[in-house]
Amino acid sequence: MFKSKTGYLSAIAAGLFAATAMAGAADQWSEEPPSVTVRYGDLDLGSPQGRSMLYRRLSLAAREVCPIAGAPGVVAAMQSKACQSRAVKQAMRSIGGPMVARLASERGISLD
Image (cartoon, rainbow, N blue to C red; front, side, top):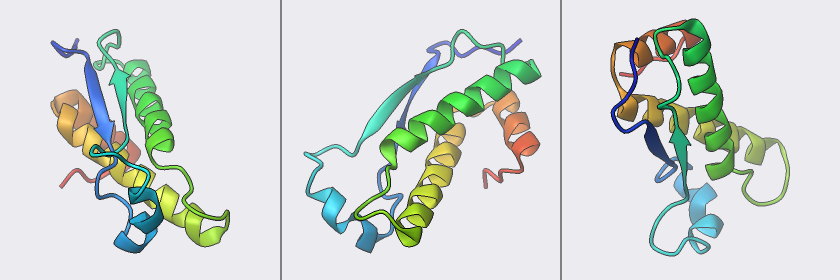
C-alpha cells in the first residue's frame, strides 16, 4: 500500500495555456496562478480503485484551474482540454512514486 506522508497536492495551471490564450485570463490573476488542493492521503494507490479515484480527483481539479477561456467555441474548448491534460500530467509528476507511474501507464500518459 502506498500513501503519501502529506496526502495532498496543489495542482497549478501556471503556464499551461498558450500565451495568446492567457492574455485575457492573466489579467484576472493576482500574483499566483489558479490552484486547487487535491487530497489523496485517504486513497490506497496500490489498488486500481485508489489510482482511479486519484485520477478522477486530479481531472476535476484540472477542470477548475483550466476553464474554457473567452467565448465558448471549439478553439477555447481545445485549449481548455490541452490545459487540463498538462495540469493532470504536472500534478502526477509532482506526486511521483511507483503507483503514480503505474497510474500514468494505465491511462496512457507519458510523464517524461
